[in-house]
Image (cartoon, rainbow, N blue to C red; front, top):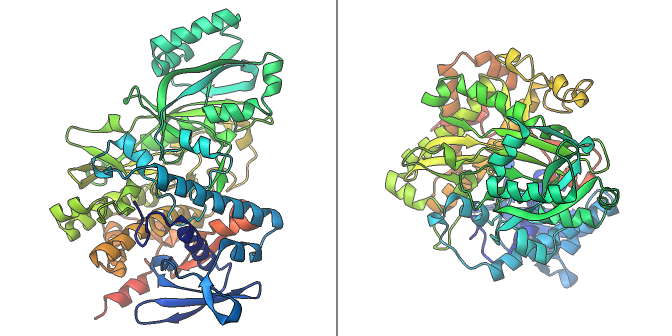
Length: 578
């Protein structure tokens, strides 16, 4: 099932178009544009070669390139389809970064083609939440390496990808406690009994007894089976050889991969916690291990946000929001060569928060077209009407995140995977946010209640001499605005507005006019005018992250570029004029 403009089984064309879109959007390649009646033509040169494509420019300057339109001027002045091999070697960066990018792009195509040939069409509208998490196989709508999973073989993809939907057990180890750090919500034994169940806990106890390993000397650690296979063949062998780690085998409940691949849902006990495990694969922009500092900080961080939400009645009555707390963390070798490779974060179960009559979907399901050619939410839109449904969706998706930023001073990474939509028969009623340990930012001077923030220096010595922007805190309010507007608007709701335009003829600029009206009404309801002015959310141009530039240059953690702001005051005022 595709995104708008996509056609199943044409992964190579999609990857080429998303690559070109990112190159033009981030200014890596400068194109000459010629605006026509129905679309825009983009012409550019790269390494002495001439390229062209057709498409449109959407909100925030996002490019939507027409299928099959990326071409290169070939021999005899004939235009032909442009290949990755013609584009990638001419890009900036180094031979290493270009080679890695090419490999990730090709592997994205290989895994996408495998999905197309091995996974039969499914009616995703009727799926449970857990099944839908894996069945959303479209991947990142912007990043061209949306299914790279560099490190996975085809067999690994078939066994552990969310799309394949194969259940698997976790691998369990006993590791010398001198290597371990943890934050558990209660006594360690009580924690494990609850998380594992009495049967599995008894099996582990018997194995521990057989090995003669005392509880006080060795702690229990889960691993993803792929991660165990990878580590057991490399850097972990020393711990095994010296008796500092012992393999217990695959045990306990079966899990299913979610669309983030490394976050897993419990199949055998649907009400149990989800668990996030490191994977040493590269997907989209980064290596999918766990930031060592964040693992044991996660409970304090998400607990803080949850406390803020619980203490503000508006999050119950006006802008309904639920926070899925990351209530436990476990890390091994946090400052050693295996830092980030072995650990786990336990997260509250989303379905356990539902009230009678409520159902839940990942927010990015709303971006998708189903096998019958209609949007995932088409039945809901037909039932409630396009405009009422759009208005309610905007309220539910935007206002909780905006209030958390504008009123409380906390910025969260509200992209399509981190947001869950709670609905009643398709009518949006509530937002759930998840995954905070690596994706929260704040400024102490902008917090409404700074005294409630975690005491970070006491949580981890790494925080004691840290610079702003190194971890969670910043002295630059632009960073807060960028995190929220990037994830919620530039790379999330633009996909919804695009789908509504393609499938229902609803002009994108009207969608964003409504968003601006919603935010203007929020400003009237709350004394936040000065705070919003400091954030500068309505300036003509805003800074956004340059994901492809980072992948090519790879010299610093983040790169940025300016884009036209669809919420700029003068822009929306001009569009309202007759």
